[in-house]
Structure formats: structure tokens, C-alpha cells
Image (cartoon, rainbow, N blue to C red; front, side, top):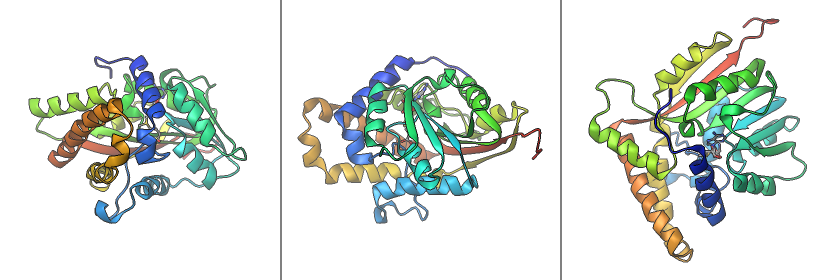
Length: 291
Ligand SMILES: C[S@@+](CC[C@H](N)C(=O)[O-])C[C@H]1O[C@@H](n2cnc3c(N)ncnc32)[C@H](O)[C@@H]1O
């Protein structure tokens, strides 16, 4: 599944710039992903704590028990990689990102006692042999992939038999009616603002996973109602920290204004049901130990 696309260079440039100006890290901390709001009341939650809650929910939902070698595909500045290393201190965790600035910042933020390392690499051409990792994890990088099938194929390739594949990603609605022109336009505005080629639906991910006979126990879930509070919460946080934002200079303020427009489209897209948040879990069949 490919469509017209901005190109991986623009993703690299975007994340390099977002890392260097520090705004994303200022507000989101080390986790560049949605928060999880169990009771939907975002105004009663801590913005950064909600992001950890998403990872807690994800590891619970996927019933991850023990891991030894994990790959974090699209690792940002390493929030998930360090989270996994804290939960499983014996595990070796490798993170890949397209952005050299993210790789450097991820390395800087990682205590030396952790067995965590980062690489600049393309998820569509992972520089690892087949069957290397017993956990392949992608938290909110799938929406950046210009070819979702290759993205999945690469992750399945490097996954070890018996291992877990975990994906959390931005999607669009699948149920009828088909997305209207206005909904498509809204999505285009979001794609353009944040270097996203296109979304697919949660059932499309499931179909793609089902095309891999080596994947078993494939499950998907729609977590939209639990995560959509992230965006009004972000606006609230931004307003509370407006003086800090204004001190960052005109270029940052201009970009933040553009982000506010994209955030508005996220809020409306979630409200109208055109944007969905999907989680996918599967295991790779172990021929020595079926199921
Ligand atoms: C929204 S951030 C998520 C970061 C991180 N997973 C987290 O939750 O904090 C998206 C990440 O995907 C990475 N990414 C996008 N396309 C990629 C690709 N083709 N190969 C590797 N990383 C990619 C970006 O560089 C960025 O690190």
C-alpha cells in the first residue's frame, strides 16, 4: 500500500528540526506519542504521565512477559526503548530512527548502565539479519511509512520465531460511509503538517498481517476514545506555557501556530470519527513449539 509521498528526507529534516528546537521535548518529554486516558478525563491527568500509561497499557494488552532482544522501530529520542530496558533490565534494546539529531539526543538521554543503543536506519530496509529480535515494537511510526506492507514485512523478517510484534499507530476510519472530501482534506492538512504520507485503517493492518502465514495470534484494537484527549490536553499545556513558547523566537512561534492548526484537525478528526488509533499485536510462529 503506497501512495504519493513527501519522501523520507522530509521526515529526517522534520525530526531533526523538531529535536533541535526542543519544543516537542519541552512539552512531550522523551515520549513522542499519544497519552492514554483510562477514564477520558484528560484535564485530571498529568500530560507526560499519560504517555507512560499508554506504554503500560500496551505492554499489558500484548501480555509481554520476558524479552531479551528488542527492536524499537521509529524510536524518536528513545522513550520506549528506555521504558522497555527499565522493565526488562537484562534485555538489549536497539532503536532506529531516520533522524541523526534524534539518534544523538536518544543516546545523550540514555544512562550508560542501560543496554540500549540507537542507529540511524530506515524501517523499510532494516540493517539486521532475519530472526534477530524477540520483540519488534513500533509506537507511532507506522503512520510515517510510505509503504505499510514493506514496513510490516521488514518487522516480521527480523522477528524471531515465538517473538512479539507490537504496533500502535494513527489510522483512519474503515466503516462506511467512505471518507468524505472534507474528511480527506482534513487528513491531507495533517499529513502535510507532520511529514505523514498517509494513514490506513485498522482492518487494513489486520489484512496485511494476515498475509504473513508466519504470524499467529493476530489481534487489533481501537483505542481512539482512550487517546484522543492528548490533543485538547496539548493545547491546554501550550496555553499554560505560552511565555516559554514566545521566548523561543519567531521561527518556533510560527511553527507552533501551524501545529495548532494541525492539532485542531486532529481534535475534529477524532470527534468526527475519521481518525482512529489502532494497536496491533501478533506473534511469529515457532515451528519447534507451535502456538
Ligand atoms: C512520532 S515519532 C515516535 C517516536 C517514538 N516511537 C516514541 O514513541 O517516542 C515517529 C518516529 O518514527 C521515525 N520514522 C519515521 N519513518 C521512519 C523510517 N522510514 N525508518 C525509521 N524511522 C522512521 C521518526 O524518525 C521518529 O523517530
